Length: 123
Length: 110
Image (cartoon, rainbow over all chains, first blue to last red; front, side, top):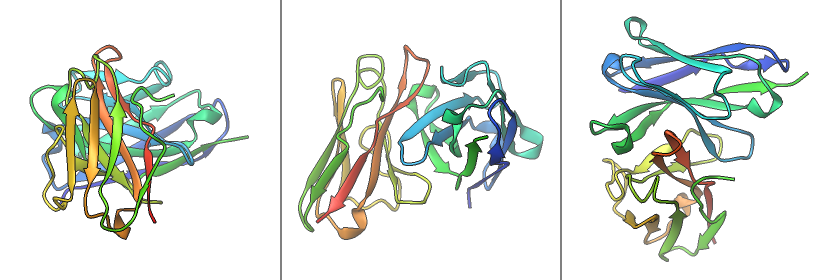
């Protein structure tokens, strides 16, 4: 069974840092692009970042570029999100999601999604 | 303000057919495929429709997707109470070089 399990969320003060992890199982992790998507309380989904299978292609949303860093360790079947200079507006549930689909990103979709980990930025 | 525009709410009675629209632009829906996700309260989103109109295995054929120009639609026929959820459209945006989502539509079954 394909499974994604996030961890590392918690309460952090504004300006602080946090590192999220996503443990993957049930598929060949090293061949799939991965993403982070977040959802602020009571709000919609917002894509955060994506990373290709070999880390050759990395993309960020404007709202996090320069503060967040996505990475992966294919030997450990794990995806990471290093979040620095956190702001109140970064408060959200963070989901990791596998990309599936054709040969290029515009032909992909997210399946499955992990259960999410809550990040709260507050003093 | 989301890049893709969805109505915030939709509703219908059991057995009815409901459609949810998703409006974008030439840099996203106009060029790339549209995917739809279903989310129940307190749970993670789940893939509902991919590549405009394809259903993953396990998704009932009551759910269908379509795309025309810079807009897409999700249709749910034979509405059931268990369809009450939030629905999101998504697509890759060539100008932003990233994924964009609609703001989500809350479906209520009356």
